[in-house]
Amino acid sequence: MSLLLVDHECRMVSRVASGSALERRLDDVGAAPGVPFGEDMVGTTALGTPAEIRGGIAINGREHYLEQFKSLSCFGQPIIHPTTRRLAGIICMTEISDQINPLAVPFVNGIVADIADRLLDRSRAHQRRVLDAFQRAAPRRDIAVAAIGDDLQLTNALAAELLSPTDIGALRMVAADPRLRETVMPLTLVSGIDVEVQVEPVAGASGAALFRFRPIVAAPATPSVIATAPACSVAITGEPGTGRSTHARSATVDAQVPPMVLDVADELIAGRHPDVLAALALARRERSPLIIDGADLLDDRSVAILGKAAAQATREAPLVVVSGPREHVGSGVAALLSRCVTRIDLAPLRHRTSELAALASAMLTEIDEGLSLSGQATDALLCQDWPGNFSELNAVLRQSASACVGRAARVVEPGDLPAAYRTTSRAAHLSGREQAERTAIVDALDRAAGNKVHAARDLGISRTTLYARMRALGI
Image 1 (cartoon, rainbow, N blue to C red):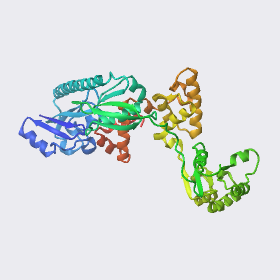
Image 2: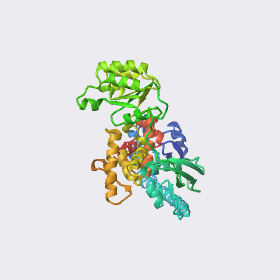
Image 3: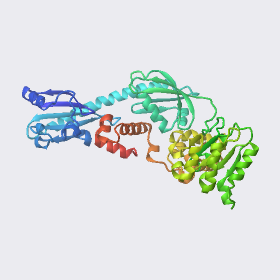
Image 4: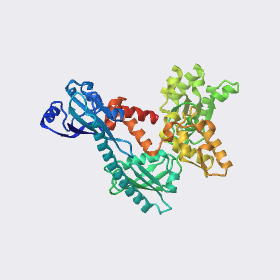
């Protein structure tokens, strides 16, 4: 008989055999340290299949996939870390026989149980070191403090209010960096708050760190606007509600006189034909910037006139054309947009998730500077599609601010949001560790171009585990 050990990637670490005959047979089949035995590499074996099923399995001679293994019978049991639930490795007992000796099962199971006990003891020691570091720092009530380890996270009251699960996930990835050194770094939280983070690795606990947070006092973040000297002609495109009109006015902020605005939609609703010629003539006479808001609603004649005007516009009397997305306009409007000197495409809010927390926080400050968003409310907002873009977000935040003030509070919670916006995806309810795990899986899938076998190998887990975690984490 022989005892074989592989790591979490099903790569052989070591083997112990009872005799030279079995040693030679193992050499013949390539069972040597460093050789991979994942199920995707060699098919069904007691060294790779346990990683797929997350349980023990006996593989008798002819049940092996490869012919070279069919003279051997094996029983393998995975070693699952008792606290992190990650695969640590697999123990396998192998013999030259048509069937595995039934005594191999309790023998291997006993070894795995002993290993799990030792891992648990080590994990408890790890937790004690993290807890000690946290207790030394936590008495400071004026600083938010968090301590994060492989299977543990601790926060004081200030940090609990400050950090969302997404923030915890990001910090966990920082703590897991094996090259981590004591440092200070800036960080923007999901809530939009900028903080300075002092990071200190926990001595004697790999993958653990202590974090201290100090808010960075700065002007509130605001939606990006154009604040450059006006060009001769500017085309601003985007979906309704993306801030097209606001950006158009910002494009003329340095003009000597206020801009004239021809709102095509307003003119049509009022039953009037938008008079582009009259607007152009008046703007030139007054040497004023002219904003045509809704150029994609104009008739072909008006669009053609604007195309000529865009080519003749001057810096003293610039022309700003506002339209829907380029891919949704006709050929005439597309030609008009292409004739403008400066072209700006505004992304819809659903494509700006990395900025949404800061944008929502800034917008809420404009509504009521005394209010702020909780991490849970921010997570709920991040899960929405926002077909109405900034207009929809503004309406939701105004209603939420009213509800928050109505209950004499200053922090907007999920219950203050309109009912339709309180529902969040599975991803928003993940713990910090799960958030980090979800991010790692998504990144691995991206690196592997969607190939789950390669992604699982990159992550050091089996395909079965990858599929299960993808379902559990909403990927």
